[in-house]
Length: 111
Image 1 (cartoon, rainbow, N blue to C red):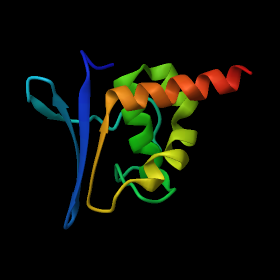
Image 2: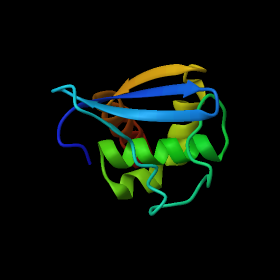
Image 3: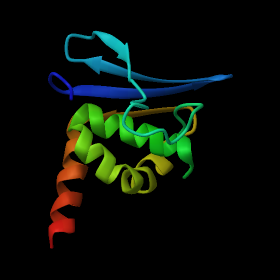
């Protein structure tokens, strides 16, 4: 879980996909793929489709923004609803947006 709001930046360059966590004080670090929670894609992250890499990214974002249990429960849905629609080479999401999506989704599941 993050230590305050962060903005996630995905960048695709030839042969490489990176997802950065940018903190309010402009510190940057790479997002962990959280393969300890679930191995969806041994090769790591991807976006813009509906494969294992998208599920791994969804899992990592949710675990970072919320918690591990929510990440495991919601990552398949998040991958389809959000990660599949991210831009080809660059994208940006805030942890606030991730939290809002998760809150809405969990509320709908309770109904």
